[in-house]
Length: 105
Figure 1 (cartoon, rainbow, N blue to C red):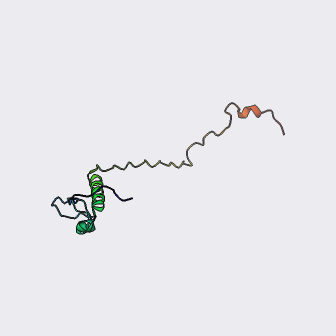
Figure 2: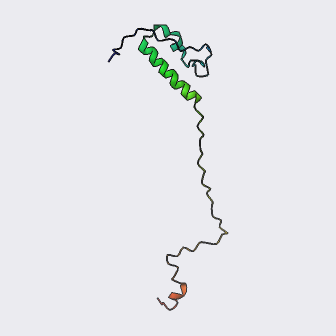
Figure 3: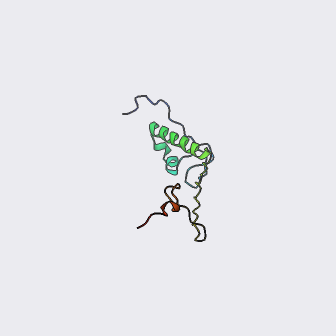
């Protein structure tokens, strides 16, 4: 659906006069891409407003504080030594070897 509001005034350029590109190709002053800067005069007002909204988002991303990655600790895997005493793996510790001393086969 088209915007029903009449455009009485042209949307002004967001240029801030810095005119230097960053490593991603966006202007460091107004945050427009090369295509957005060079094609500004051919855009209609709704397209210009969309570009300005994109520029605002890009500026917020650039000025946002860097997120710190929290690395999860790697669990230390300890391999048991053959020289360590073997753990007591009895199901019930109340049963002793002596309880079966009178048992015959």
